[in-house]
Image 1 (spheres, rainbow, N blue to C red):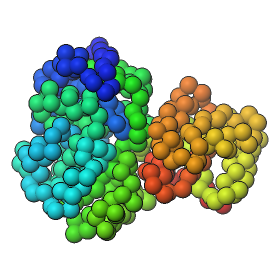
Image 2: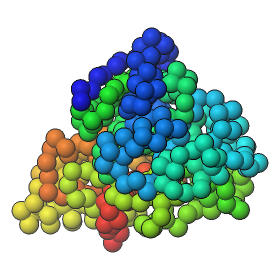
Image 3: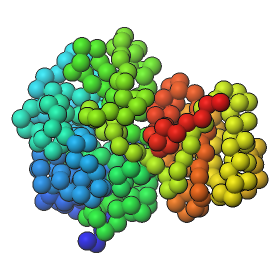
Length: 348
């Protein structure tokens, strides 16, 4: 398959520029497109055969549910059996935006979208390109991140091309994504709304609106039945084994220097994903990928997947990553880093 790259204006996409991509979606094809979080790999979310193409192109397990993306709030009524009051509050405040809400599904939603669950995850993205594409296609777009399953999510069209060229019909290029980590996923079918995946809307923001939010136990481990995208299987992994360091104050640098020095002494080539404050203090000979200042969680989130992909072109035997505070968007960053490391963590 030949993959076409279409370039569009990020803030004011022309209909004519997006129409070829919309036509591909209407006929059951696959289109990678930008959102404010990451690039998604889209198909007609009401066409089971089209959705099956997503799983095939990504190599994604079929019990891993997908998010349906819509362009207007009213479109959720075709997908959700009911709108709980707490979900409506979240929609009113955070849509369009990086928040996915889990509802009880209607019969219109194919089983293949939900991984066999009786719930459906829905999002109204803030990206003008994404919303215009959905409007032109005329259907909800099922879309996980546009990467090979298990790899770091793409925040540029070039990263999509590296993973999926030759497997999909079109990549819509509107430049880098602003937020850099996927949407927050919250389940509003539970007695107390449950955070299934931290993301662009923070836990603190959710609590301010809802008063009470439970954290799903799977956020700190793996589980057998995923209730949301990103809850099962290896995710976000760089091209070499990674170890995450979680420590306070000077302990972080002490551990990073100790571990990288030991690995180099053992004959390994070593990489590190670290803050700008730490980068100049590491053992000589370590290949360094900087994700930003540890004083700016939003900057780190925006650069995280690019930092993880850095080692695709700078091969190493092992990577050590610097953890950050879980305040604000740091919770989403640490969730991704822990999964990228396969829960290989050093904290002392």
